[in-house]
Amino acid sequence: MNAALALAAGFLAAVLHLAGALKTAPPLAALPLDLTWASLLGLLPLLALLAVTRRWLLAPVLALPLAAAALLWLWLVLAGAWSPSRLVLAQKLPEVVLLAPAMLAAGLLLGAEERARQALCGTTFGIGLLLAAIIAAQAAAGGFAVPEEAGRVHHQLAGLALAMAAALAAVAALRARGLARLPWALAVAGLGLAALRPGGRTALLALAAGVALAPALLLRRGRAMAWLAAMLTVLAGAVLWLALRPDLVEGLRTLERLTADPAGLEARLALWQAALDWAGLAAPWGLGTGAFTIAAGHGEWRGLYPHNHALEVLAEAGLPGLLLWLGAFGGAAWVVLRRAFLVPPARLAAIAALVLPVAMTVLVSTDLGNRMAWFALGLALSLGVTARPAGSPADV
Image (cartoon, rainbow, N blue to C red; front, side, top):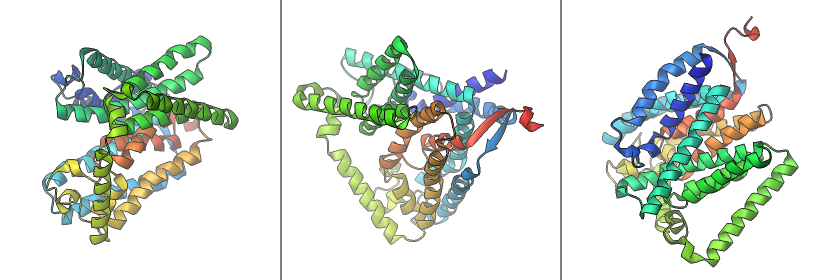
């Protein structure tokens, strides 16, 4: 019963985490139910049961990031009091105050519970393979059969799913022995090829980083450096091959945007500069939650957020918000460093495979209301949590 509970929770958490990619990928886009709400409503009671059927031991190092996250949510509510926004504020605040704590708690619990973590990783890998198969089918049919706006969302979120799945497959390949490594290696290659088509540049870079870094955490220092050197050699070879064969880039939307589409980078640089400018003008308290797009002249258009978590919180929540954000997310990085040698390497590598792509995305995209960022934060912090069955000898 306890095992089934953990497996179900891990499965639903993976679906919730990657629901955005699934909902924009045909034929799943035609489902008569919303995967986000369906998986969330199924996950919440399972999390409650999981919480009361395990004994949870929290390391003291978690105190700072957890307190900072809670205070950040409170401060964003207060900052909404002087925000001129109504539409963006009404959208973002419930996500930050209601969904973000639930997602952080989910990551914290599921990352610490072994069976739930295994189900989370397995389902994430399966979703990645499913999306890769859909992309391959679309390529065989001559392109993406989705509307332009849906395709834009698809390339961001599907790319993240592919990156996580590829990193998990690379970890599994390194843990396997002999010919058992071959299927995992082929999966990494297939997921990497699929990531070349949707158009997600950050996701492609995250895939390369995840495949290189996550498996290295399984190895001792000398072998880890050799693995990283081998991955850099493979990457350099791929870049050189594509440089010598530019005709191969045609039709591969990700590579086209990465090599010949500077508009995306220019737009981000403009948003980052605007965020810094308005952060200075509105210092020290910030513009107010959700107010950046109005101040920058874009009206109530949430899509033109600063595309960087730190700059967004600095512009909208001022210096107090930035300090609290650093305490939460920077504190999570400190937890990972402190706990890296205290947890099993396989657990550390699995968490890294799931967290690294989202961590990279937080730097160049997504806003504070994105549930994936808070779930990844919880997963990182889960390295400081130990789960034991309730009623174990340690309880006596």
